[in-house]
Length: 243
Ligand SMILES: C[S@@+](CC[C@H](N)C(=O)[O-])C[C@H]1O[C@@H](n2cnc3c(N)ncnc32)[C@H](O)[C@@H]1O
Image 1 (tube, rainbow, N blue to C red):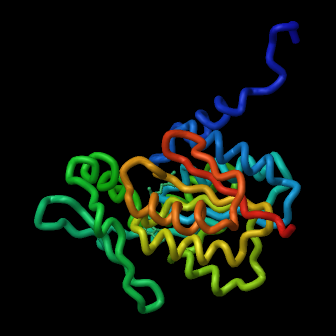
Image 2 (cartoon, rainbow, N blue to C red):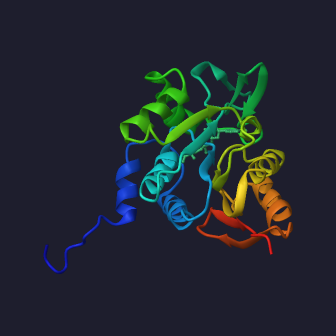
């Protein structure tokens, strides 16, 4: 090795290469922040949680960081809509509804997906797969993380079925409505270890529900410290340790 040669592939490059062929929305700067938080929290008890995984773009980055820092399991919760769950609204945009355990759940109901991004980014995925969960598992397996990642179809309510579950980092990127984000915070908080982190996608940009939930349930709650806007769209907060 020459003196100027890097000993390791830089983390950002590893992340870019890992997600290059996984469709999704989380940009590299946010992925890098999530990666760093998994590494920096590896001294805490608890696992890694993601609510809103889609095809696994952010999930594999959480898994990569976990692999490098002790192999904590990564639980990925999503409604994982199937091809036939989507419907076109009267204005041409799209929403979905899924039935899980006899209960109906809606996705993209208030902020719907416009026709052009739906036809460009979403519809083609269903040409090869009936459901997004299939594609998610395929991506996780292809990237070598099937031993670390488990997928759960549903919402953060699923956590109620695992009372002993503990997490140290939760990435919330599911429903962006006010009530849904409040519910996600409440459901995750029951399992978050002291000093553990909650991170929010799309904070303080154009989702009023996300902003209001963060203000009321995180910033004004007094239960969190180190509340920070980390990238243009990612907000992170650390649960206080007991005094
Ligand atoms: C923006 S995408 C997630 C993007 C993903 N994190 C990435 O990096 O590509 C939002 C996801 O949330 C899921 N979703 C919508 N409402 C949900 C809810 N209430 N609970 C869990 N997932 C939900 C959708 O099915 C969709 O996969």
